[in-house]
Length: 328
Image (cartoon, rainbow, N blue to C red; front, top):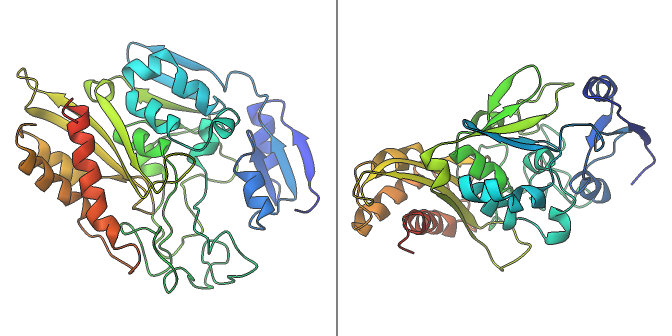
């Protein structure tokens, strides 16, 4: 790490003004920025501390939904009785993320903005070719060890997977991010790598996440988040699924469904084809549920070592659907 200027922002406008300076970045919980600085990926000239800005850490609910401030700690959101009751996928996604120590420091806004865990991205001393770090330099991962890389939303320029859990749950529940001057759906907030993998979100210079709004719906209340990983704690998803279901009067026929995937794509991945195929299906027809779940891998591209994800992800989706329906 190198020396940098530290500035404590007094207001949102003050923070935006300072971050417009060349080489300036925001810091809140610091769990992502310090990590990137230590491995040599981030080297800011100025760090703008927004951790003490008023009102951005609040969690407030009304009849239409819940608003989660960008500075609300992950653990506080996960443990909130209202979140656990009305938005269980959100609570579970946070509870399964990182470690208890990190969850008590990390903020929800920072969690959404965390960068990939691709080892080729995070080791600039060894791997010079990384289009996220140095646009146009190439992608070391494509010809490397790809076990943890994406099979959906990739490009010839990048196959790095999005690492987060919370954003997957929020995408499934149609959450919206407040950037101050505009509102952006979580599903639209993250950008596919295409030819510009260095640009990961729609954030413009000077913008910052202020809050996340999750609508109150039957799908949100009857939702879950399932994460499959190599070990039970402090590990990123090999594949994950956030599922919300609404049933007909019989309690088994699916009226409406919402499905998003994590661990297998370059962004939080909404599986619209799965949702459409689930409508009218009964939870008793496990074969039909499994067939619908396999549609989650439409367009998937294997790069050798990550081939198992194409088989794993639909199974995770099926299990999450049955779990949401009380059958797993």
